[in-house]
Length: 140
Image (tube, rainbow, N blue to C red; front, side, top):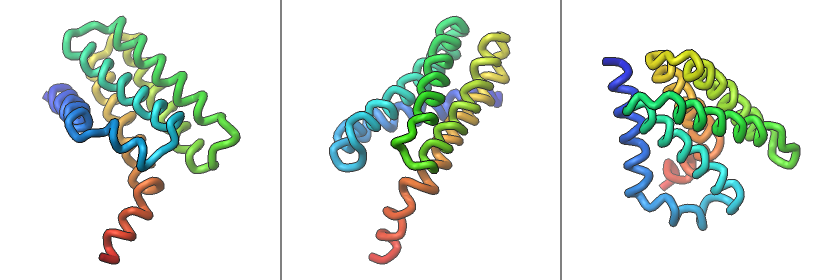
């Protein structure tokens, strides 16, 4: 049941992003290379979710490895602010747990690890990226 709930949340998040005009937001919120990396991560999460739903652990493992590699690479980019690098490092660590669970073929652990990946993304975005936006909304 827990796996089903986590997978449902992941699918709902991906569908919501697809219908909310996420591609249009790029012009307003992030440089093109940052946006591409974020869309790549979301695409990997969506691929992992879809693979888990049909029990395709090989495809889930491949997407998890791509996600981990991208996040590890971004976490070491010196031109990015330290807080951004740390955030991506946390996602890379969570993705490493996802890779380990996929390699072991443990579906329950994969569902939990996928939730940790999404939580790591959301925490960083909420605390750092959206903090100024929330302050402006409170003033109105």
